[in-house]
Each structure stands twice: as C-alpha cells, then as structure tokens.
Image (cartoon, rainbow, N blue to C red; front, side, top):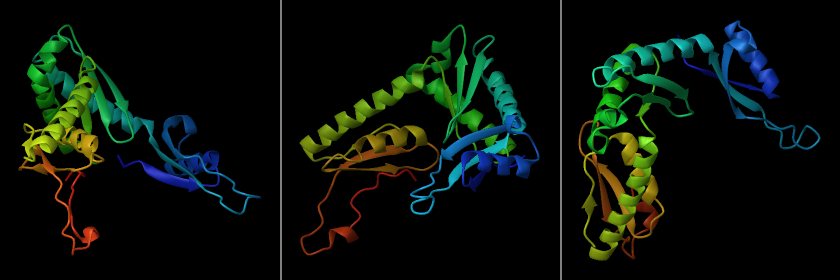
Length: 229
C-alpha cells in the first residue's frame, strides 16, 4: 500500500494515462483527483500550464475504508446498537459519518463522546495504516453545527478582549477545532491568537495585538500566530 502520487502532463487525459501506466491498471481502477486542469496558453506557447492530478488504485482506498469501518464499528457498537457508516475522502481529511438509533448518545454532552471516539479511531488507524490519515467523525451533522458555534464563540471572545484589553481562553480543544478558531479571527484587527498547552488538546488564547514600537521595524516583530502548530 503506497501513498497517492501526483502526475503532471499536457492534459488531464495524458496525466491519467501516465498514472495508469505507473500503476499498471485501467482508468476505472484508479481513484483520481484533478488538482489542476491545465491550459495551452497563447498559441500553445505563452502561459501554458500542465495538468496535475493525484491518483492511487481504488483497492487501496477500499482497504483503508474497510479498516476504518471495522474499527469504528467496534468502538461505536459499544455505545449504540447496529451503527451504520459512510466514508468520504476529502482533500485534507477522511470524513466518517455514523448514524444510529440514538445519535445523541454517540455525540454526548457538547460533543465530548464523539470527540473521544474520533480521537481513539484516529490513533488506531494511524498505527495500522502506513500513510498519514486525518479522520473526522461526525453524527447527525454535528460537526457543521459545532464549527459555526466555535466561530460564534471566537467572535464573542474577540469582542470581549477588545473591550477589556484582557486575554481570553477557550477550553482545551483538538487541533481541528483550534484551527477553526484561529481562522475565524485571523483577519480581526487588534486581535492575535495562539495555542497553549501540551498533548493533543490545547487551549486557544485570544489576546490583544501589541503594536510594534515606533523605532522598530514591524516586519521583524512577530505579533500574531494564527497557524496551528
């Protein structure tokens, strides 16, 4: 089992043909993501861009899906009977959606049960699969609702920081939720954010942005950290 590879060529069809040749399989046997369609430019000379795709044999994704499904079923069936799963491979993560007769039990208070299940599922998959896989576990569209709630919380905390001049902190959050907070405030004037803590769960600190001294080059002063580490 190998990681999906990128292929470049003059057109998408030619890039796919190269992928088929590399993996010794037909087009139908490949899982293909078109990253760039490519263009011929002016008269085929100026501004031409190559097509870029990412491809891997479908059976490898099928192996990954089967492994994720088996692990998730063992975890979730300890909480609810006969859980059902759908798996969607997105550009930056694999989304696993579980449905059952009692989704609220799977989600738990403030999503704590769902987050714990997601963390355990991700750790087990990371040990068993040779390539990095970022997993999001969802139930009853909870994650989308949670993301919006996190954005609302970020705005409220930022307003409080600007009003009082004092820093604010969230509860410990997993990396995905911290990223939502950072992105929600990255363009907010007078505010900076950073993560604080050890381990997989860290707090997001919202702080007033301190202007650079007048005699100091502002480009040499780090005043914000909005990227997740």
